[in-house]
Length: 491
Image 1 (cartoon, rainbow, N blue to C red):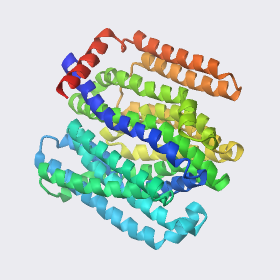
Image 2: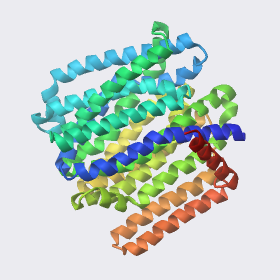
Image 3: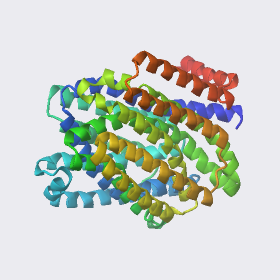
Image 4: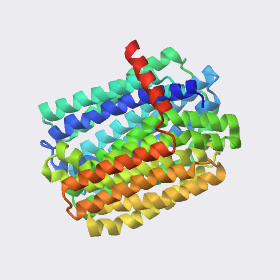
């Protein structure tokens, strides 16, 4: 990659980081307020409502997110087909949403009993489902901006959504004091507002047009993914459901707080993904099977900067939790460390899915996901019974390592990315080693001053790895410095 291309990639990375950075600031403002108004049990109810919301919204989307991303690059030079692909996908997903909303309403009481073991949470369950589904709808518009490399549009609308949701949640929780459902209302109303704004904007860029042929083409890619989504959501939400079933709502709340902090790692990697996934797809389509080496070299810097944040969150989880929450939530500290390792390892998961989608092996992705879910369930049940919420975190991490490794091997078989394995191994050795050491030191109640020294040493070791693999170089530093200086001059 030449300096001009590298500069453009770094510039786009900064753009995509902005929403994530703003979103990161929100918990520093809201959690100290919300955790002193809402109880652990309130957060448990919120987490369980999102179990159904995530599951149902996954069914609503029917795997169309992946098929849209793939087919966008197939038709990116044809404006009419690009429009047809976007609007046809949106219409199909909207019809799915309305259909499932009716079913959810009709069976609201049995569903509430199944999820919460009580009929008292019907309203929050329905609202959470609507909020999650509408959020997924406006994500298709954002996917169009991402894929067409309109970074400024993507960032502007994403930040607007974050700020609207932030203001509404503060108003409903801190001023109206309507309880935990205020967080769900804030997401729902902000999603509806953004959906209409993005619909209007999209109509000014792309003419309203539909195509049955493109829908059928998309469904051929998406429908084999539906079992993967179905079981994938079960796997991702099963831990919280089982904590509620086998432990307590308070345990679900603690786990949810730990997951919320560590999920910053996933959001950060998703922001970077908006830069490297479109470029990866382009290399795959342009170079076919010969693009594996180019893709591997291209992805190493993204692996390094992705894991850098995961390492920081894992190392300083106790400082983050201690600042943001009262002492009743501090048992979430180790959960943050463990789940940060899990989300960091998902860097590979983001690529393996694209490898299988590119080669149209989506049915294999679904089969592998079913295996992963079975493993996750088998580990979660005994781990939760034995260790509660912390057991769920360990089960999720171990199951993720095993199933992720299987995914990696299979995806490499169908489209080989020639990773720079020595560099990747050094990155993850420091990451996992430092995170596990921090858990050990905390469990043995080692003094904080020593733990802090170990944290700083770990960061130095990671910086040394960056120097050794020639990512932290003077050339890259000057490149970033010039981009920042340019942004300041033009702002």
